[in-house]
Structure formats: C-alpha cells, structure tokens
Length: 114
Length: 109
Image (cartoon, rainbow over all chains, first blue to last red; front, side):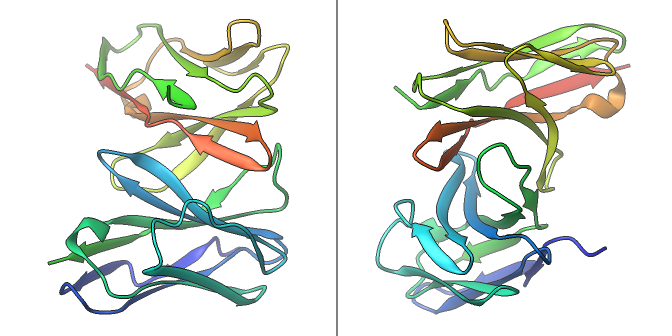
C-alpha cells in the first residue's frame, strides 16, 4: 500500500523563481497537512485541509505561499517568488481524522533557494 | 513561552541504558499527545500515543502529567537503533497540532 507521495524529492532554484511542491495523500484520508522543517524552527504546520477544504492557514508565512487541494488525491504548495529563507524540507502528511489520529508523513521535498 | 518545549539534547547514552525525555506544553486544554520518531534526513513516524493512564509498548513507556503539563518518554535497554530525534506532539485544542523541536538521542556501543 503506497504511503504519502511527494514530488520532487529535491528542488534547487534561484531566488525569484516559482516553486511548486506536490503531494498525493493516502487514499481514504480526510485530512492533509503541509509542514516546513528547519534546524532553527523545527517542524511548523503551514496549512491543513479537511475534505479538500483549507481549514487553517495561519501558519503560512506570507502571501508568497499558497496551497490548493483540487481533489482528494492531490495537493500543491506553491511559493512565488521564492527567497533563500524558504530553504527547508517541506513535508506533506495525511490522516483519517484530526484529534487522536496518527499522521502519515511523506518523504519530504528538500528545497534549496540560491 | 513556546506552546511545546523539549530539551534538544543530544542525550548520549551507552547501549543498555535507560533514558527519559520530558516535554512541556503551555495550553491546559490540550487534548491529545504523541511521540514521533524522526531518523536523520527522514520523515517523522508515530512512535506511540500518550494516554492519560500512561502506556507501554515494549521498551518504551509514555506518561502524561496534566497537573504539571508535561509528557514523558522512557526508553529502557537502549539499542543502537534507537538513535534518532524524538518529537513531542500536542493537539493544543482548536484543531491545532504543535510539534516540539525534538530531542536528539545518540546510543553508543
């Protein structure tokens, strides 16, 4: 059974470029989460969806970040324009429910903005 | 004050040792608690949930102290393969999950 799938696994881009990260959650999971992890700040929740609807985007750092979930099997996180401080590992996770449910993480996308 | 705080470590212990980590949380209305494990350059994975009465899974024991607002993880008979970062996760209410920054454990031969 496939877990959460993320692409690309690595992305190197220049400052100012648009970056799109992709995620396919586990089938049947109603919740999808986007996280960012850095050494300094640890794992931060950016946004999460329930049944494809964004519920809480208070963790999105600024307007340069946007996320969509057009259907139950696909989500994107877009950064436009990218900046060096966006360099981090971005994880997507999914779960069957929220409170008390295990989150299954994808392998992450390691983003480097030069 | 951070919502969830952990000692970053690293905790350096020999094989066979017993080691314990604590994690404190600030919101007394927090509802559910977990320990996740993250290996170097890998994704976090659930280690165990933490129940009010405390729970054990093999060499691992998790406890919750609501009065003092902390959870703990005890690892007995440490193995080399236990070397990882252990993340404390708290559902702080209002449908919000907060991850601690993690405690790094290094088990040496």
